Image (cartoon, rainbow, N blue to C red; front, side):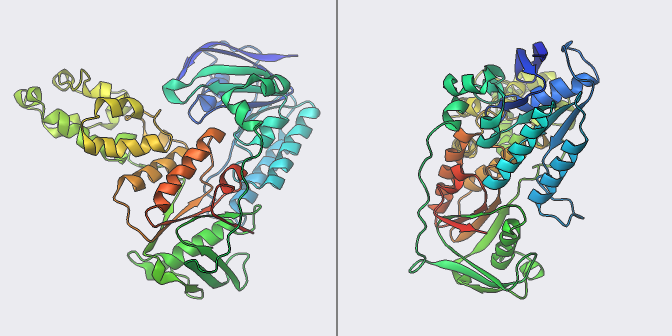
Length: 462
C-alpha cells in the first residue's frame, strides 16, 4: 500500500507532527473541533503543492479541497443541502485517479438517508481506485472509512497530537474518545408530547418555497427541532417563524403578509443566530467581539505603572498590525503586568487560562465563563474572529446571548447548530440550550443529527 508520509511538521497546533495517510483509500480524519484537522489537510497537504517545505513524500501532484457552503449563494434555486450535494457529485465526476480529493464535512446538515447516499458515493469512487480524505464528525462516513486518523486529545493548544492511525477494525477497538462515541449504543429516543394544554405558536397559510397553504405548530419553552432531507423546507420554515415573530425595528418590512399567527402574544421577539463569520473588522478578535477586552484594558490602564508612564486605555488596543505580526505594543505598554502577564501574554491566553488569571473580576468571569460553557475554552483571547469555523462562530454568539441578562418569552432560531461539532460536544450544546429555555425562552432549530434531535423536547419531520 502506498502512503503519503508526513514527518515532523510544525504548523499552528501541530508540533513535530508525523502521520502516514494511505492512498487509494477512504480516509476519515476525526477529532474535536480545533484539534488540527483543517491545519493538516489545508495548511500542510494542500499548501505543500505550492511550497513543499516539509518534504512530504508521495504527495499527489493535484489536490482538490471541497468545502461545504454554510450560506447559500444568492442566485441559487436549490436548498443549501441540494446545492452542497450537487457540488459534491460534480466534483466526484471530474477527479482523476492520480488526484487526491479532500472533502470537509460532506455529511453536515444531511438526513440519515442522504448521509448513507454520500458515504456510498465516496465508497464507490474509492473502490474504483480513487483517493479520498474526509474530515468528518458524522458516524456514517467514519464507520465506512478504510482508515482512520484521529487528532486530539482536545482542541487548540490542547490538541494537535496524533491519537490514532489505523484501520477501521483497529479503530473500533481503540477506545479513543471518538471511537467510544461512534460505536456507542444508541441513546434515548425522543418521546413526542401532546401539545394540548401547552402554550404554543401556530403559523398557518404559509405559501413560500415548496409550501402551499401549509401550517406548522410548535410548543413554547422547549427545544424544538425541524428535521428532513434537503429541499423539504426546514430553512424556509425557520425564516417564516423568524419573520412572523420578529418585533424589532422595522418589523413590518420583513413580515410575511399572508401568514396567520396564533399565540404571538406569548412571544416577546425572535432572534436568528447565523453561522456566518463574526467580526468583519480586520482587528476583530474573540476578546473584542465579546467586549471582554474593554474590561481587560481598564485593568491595565488603571495599573500604578500605567499611571506613572502616562499610558491610557487606548494604548492597550489590539491593532490590525499587531494581529498580523507587522507591529507590536510599545515597550512601555509591555512593562505593565497583571498576575505576571503583560498585555501580549494576555492576548495569547486561552479562555480557560484567562478565567484563572482574572478570577477576581466578576465582569470578565461572566463573559468568559459562557464561552467555556459552550465548549470554546481552548480558543485564545487574541484569535481573529474571521478565523473561527462556522460552528465556533455560532457558539460564540450563543455565549454572548448567555452573557447578557436574558429576557424571557423569546424564540432563538438556529440552522444546523451541530455543524462542526464533535460527538462529545453535542450534549454540551444541548445543556447550553437548556439554560436559555430555563429563562422562559424557546429554542427552534433545524438539524438532522440524531445525537441532537433525540435530546430535544419536540420534533417536526418534514
